[in-house]
Length: 420
Ligand code: DSN
Image (cartoon, rainbow, N blue to C red; front, top):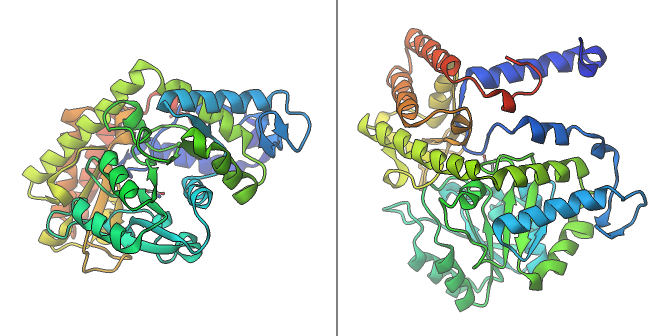
């Protein structure tokens, strides 16, 4: 039987099918991507998309909230419980808005925000120069250590003492090592700053116990819900009770109008999934796979930023190979190995053609790959990157990758339309 979408809009239906087939037939290694469960997708696609719910449970500006209040309360309670936080706000549309809300809850426009430089692994919204976070706040970036590419708390403390920021944000989008939230909190306390921890990349690892939690140390914790946490596209804030009202006001009415209740319901579903014991196994396997992949890449002569990984993410510095990050990522993509080009710390090349490739293991772990297959993926990558001008080798590698995908099909509970 044809689906409603197929009948109503065959073009979009077909494109979604094509995307589903693409996602099945490649090894997806963009470290911020994953496969969400059918249950999460079902909640995202529900009638809750029809409902406006400005405000918070029990205090809305529209009537008809008999169900939405229960949905949002469940999502908040599950998130709070999962992360052992005093308060959760599940309304931010995305991680970027969650970060902006965290800052605007804790400081005034023009005050100083100190965050990790984008080109050293931070996010745009940690105060990078083109982001609104550097236009509304006085942004002071901190780098990683130029020799080790590791966070260097002497440098961070010196910058904090010099600039006396109102907010220090820690967390990263391209940092392969454990983040010491306690030391960040000590530096923030020493200069009278609030600490915001952005755990968008590692939230699932925190839940699974394979990365320390910032919740005991940070004033506000910000995250997306769709990366290692494996929920719908969305954002979330966790905070201490003392900041709860300010955080809620910063999200609504400060930055947003009506929350996406379909997303809130899917966050509730994802929080329940993440609280099950098998999710901790999943989180552990993400890290085991990343380490296996990283070690094999290094055995094959690749230079990894910081010399390996503690988390889900690997950053290859290709300068010793004489290949740009962009042509490398494009060749890998032709061989069904999907990564993204990325700057490496102190990159001499421009961001549009940087020296690195960023990859990670959340999605390939969801499809069931374990260490031996992660090592095979490293070998496929090496074959492509060692033969970047040889389309025949790239094509042949793509066939081997397709065979691996067939061997490890995306589990049915992660598939949506095209039961491929
Ligand atoms: N775009 C995300 C990432 O890929 O890391 C961060 O927002």
